[in-house]
Length: 574
Image (cartoon, rainbow, N blue to C red):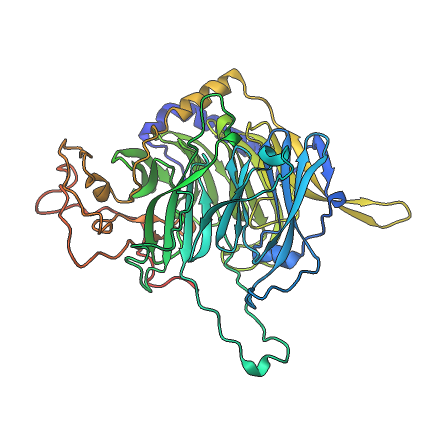
């Protein structure tokens, strides 16, 4: 399908054509020989053990790799060893031990290490920026700052952060490390143990395979007044939005020295698991369908509606922000197997587009916002793989990682990583955007015959930013809405109902009572499936009707916000 850039983006048509030429050339090379790494650090001396393939196929997180700064890496990996039995552990736990090692670059010297006992195979570590990380153990979240605490001799000391009474289902961290989206479900009571089996072997347990996706100081969003309002069997998912505030941050102060304070700033309930493309200042939504695709806009939490033009796609788009002002989106060209990846900014400019001719699955990204770059990982497959199914070994061909300059779509590097980890996190982009690190297996012959297997961290340098690059990065960054710290709401009518918010007609809207946040609701995009999330059920008492813009509706024919997608199912998928 030919791509017609939106009118707002036509002034960059020359950039678009140039970017397309770059990607056609890179696609033609196929899986060419990877460039040689600048540095290789074997992991076996640190106690690394081969990862069981069955866990990787299920989507388990078995290892992670993260930059703290340009000179330090944090690597974690599971190890097999005996563990003491804990009386409080339910029988369906997947207890395992994870080693965490802090490494110095370029020497590869170990600076500190620790181990964690975790109780499931979901994602357990998230980068919060500035050398700080968030660790999940069941439904309790703690933070750690290894470099900051290294000199005191307790690099991996944990600070209490968040605890949920509900079960954590997924966690998303914004590209700018200033917002958490935490999705939870109601905790199921443990099943009673059959006393007739107490003396024999335990009954088989169905392991949980719906693993976490990338998933004030004593905040407990799972309890308290109003925590269960609007929750029913048809809306079992709850999403809490938590701003990450660094109140101690001052000009010239290192980011890692500013303590992070979580501030609860919104909550919604949905009938299914969703991922909302958003920043701390607003969110993307699909506004209407066109003959070629879908119209997108960005709705700020203060009520501004930014028209972003259209995206030519034959399937629901799946956008993801890579900075506060730029996002990428997957689309299709006639069939779900013919995928496109396109870049946009909040001025409505279509920046570039990448076309893929092969099947792929499990995309993930890692951003270096200050450099205007991001690393994009995808797994190339031999056949179509559905997101919820466990693939076979034969279906997964390779996991490749590309580093892209966002403003023009220039590909700076393409390498492969192994073993293939569906959950990602086996690669990392440095905060300054000047190096990429991946975990890679190698096989090499040994004297006397045989093959030696080795797993190592491979580090690849990236070209420095030119003067033009730096200027363009500043231009793109200036497109982000200024920080307002306004309460997060996901409906245009609901935003306009806030006191002091003016509509396009210049009139202040009526106030919707805070006790009924579901008074008016647009649709929310599920970036995994393209479906829409059900909005919270309305309270029995109808709120005051907000004032409607004259441009949007007439008295006889009120305008209903359009959507491309069918309503979400009444019950979540099994």
